[in-house]
Image (cartoon, rainbow, N blue to C red; front, side, top):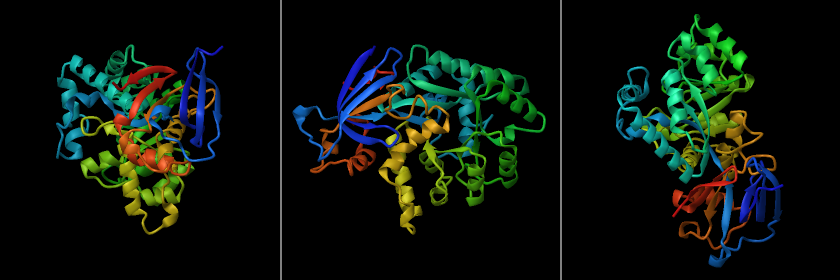
Length: 389
């Protein structure tokens, strides 16, 4: 029996983000979509004020974030990457040790509200502070319905197994954290708990020996950044069946360069996007895909076959992201059997006005023009979790 039915004039459905009209979602007691009915669109969209022209878009997945530093916004402005985030003496890490936990928790909770207002229904956090850091984040998320994966970070070898057990996986700041002493412990814990290991790599420089070791060991499932990767590094990602998450705006903030977009697109590597450190970047994934698109237009201008479509961009924060973290059976698209996670955009808002909208150009409009204020409601598991007043 359905728990509820939700109707929208338009929606982007399925793995291919197909535009449909007169969409009704039948949601079961667990918050999953039991059935979907709709009409095919065979003409232009009708955008009339009395027609309640809402568009349902699948909930965005923020594939890489450090939510714990949200309390310290812009305290690292114009500082170098290593000054701010390099453990254990970067500014962020000093502040996380010094600041009262209640302030950190308040920052996390406000960051969640910001994400919900931006249509983000799932985030993957790299959690500093070992077991204590994981527990702090879980405490901050008590009674909060936003979906998340917490990738913990062990403080020393004695914490490796307990962090694997407590968190949803492990998120390394660098492959330097893996050495001849702890490698066997990490491999053993990964096999025992069957959880993800992710790692920052080549964000600011390309350490060839470290990169080769990482690929040869093949312990890492998800690579973050890869800003300094070259083609042969990317080819190894394909060979090892690893996922790649890019954070282009944060790379720009720190001045470390642009991701190797032309090589990534040429090799057809599916990527997802993250907003990274909240002390230096907001959680708006619409801003992220627009920034990424503009960089790609410059870096790939010589090859028209490498041009990104708006569907490509939107998949980076939905379909691709879910696959990167092995959650695609329940998240990433509005499909039968998946959780009813989505947000509603009002197509009648002034900044979205266009004299002609159809299934060919609606994704361009959404990807290039949507702002936070266009998002009127956000749902998780069929329940309203944010409504813009």
